Length: 234
Image (cartoon, rainbow, N blue to C red; front, top):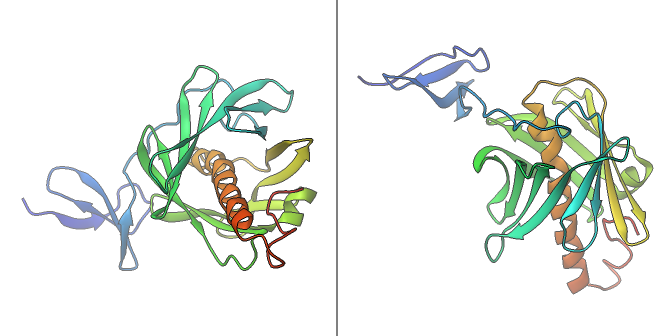
């Protein structure tokens, strides 16, 4: 039987493609097609990395692994960094049972959010007029779910805020430095749907990867243009 476009039974889109046997991930809105699986993969079970943890701190020093702690200072997970190609880098977030929570893979093809090796979204980098500015959108299932534009000064002051597409605050981020350790703090500002967990936990690894890339670029282009403008707080 030939497939057809039908009203999306999930209500998330105008239409979804029925292949004659099952609903597919192909969706359409205002004539624009994309992908949004009928059912998102469930976030792994975790004792402390879910949205229950309204405040998390990610420590970044050396090659890793790097600890993730909650508001009480108790370690609830860790980050690991790896290379998967000559131009590809990734950071994964794990809980304390060594369960991989979410991975962010950055390459020349873009920045991908993956759960259990399945791509669930992408992070887009936009309008980088300054190496000290982070301007991103987070897409899940082909739709933008969150966005943020912040300068290095915003991160230092704890005023970097991620919002939903309408501009409502979702979470705040700050980057501080303690001796040779950089600390990225994340605070949830409001309650969110479950699928935002991917956006919440993917943005910190993505920022670490991007700022490391920019710092490496500056190190190889250290002149009057780039010196003293590292995106990482000094």
